[in-house]
Length: 304
Image (cartoon, rainbow, N blue to C red; front, side, top):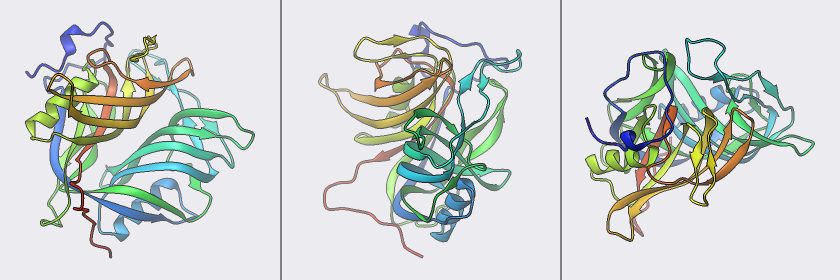
């Protein structure tokens, strides 16, 4: 088994199922930077799924910033009500007329249909800022919404039952490529519980020969250790990677740098740069790692 820093971690969580030997899964693929047009009058899930389909893609990663909402419903992390799960979700919070300040979402599929997973922060009409897990079928954009996305070619996230955590979770699977001669090299990756997120990312990238790499994604951690010395111990959270990358460090090794936003089960919102080797995954982390473009070599998807 590959060492991803798990043995040295001081915080751990016990899930109800057997531990899976594979501590991360990565599928090589390509991505295309695209502009989506999400239609009004649909749920967020429907609008983004249709927007990808109009360009001939199954899904990808979308970053949402300062997006007005007609309806916004979300949950936060919470303690599990019984021993069938190690963590759970809060009651539903509603925010009519809110604005998504910053969020990230993976559009994949569930039971063969478009399905997305989104974490982010939002502000209510009266100025209250909160963070959590967006409910995509209950939420709706305020109008036609332009969005920037990284569309996937050659892989997709598919919801499957995970025995270790007893949750239905996204897992990357290979798909036939539709644009063989174009796109940026990338990895679609998920990381399992009690695995340090930074070292897992580094190991996955090294296996596929990715070096200068942008890292996007969402997930959960068992507390957090930030590089300013802050250490949080609440055992369940919702995370958005605000800025992530893999690059050559001062000691000559490729290292992951992750700046995140997080809300934990105490409803405390925090953020900062994670300390490498000290931040174990709680339930899962879903990542898209994209090789940086060389200057002057912009790759665009075919428009339909």
